[in-house]
Image 1 (cartoon, rainbow, N blue to C red):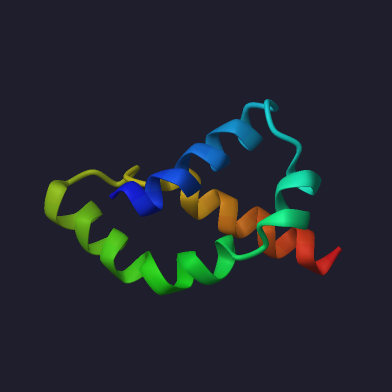
Image 2: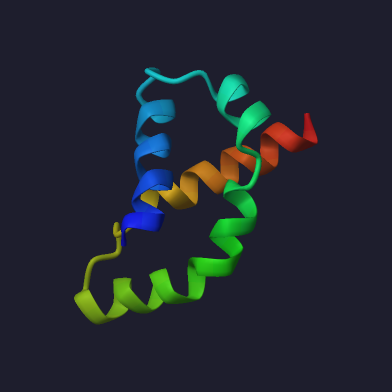
Length: 71
């Protein structure tokens, strides 16, 4: 929980415009890899807890990170 929460927070800060995504992804490009490593567990928690939004900002961070890498 504490490990994935740092990515969740970064996703929130980027989504709300408080953290520049270029700055973040230039330094911490590993968000996409960490999402891939953890998404099956997160999807399981979403289902078990009936919380489809659990760690949604972590997932959005990975999506934005992939787009950033492509650009």
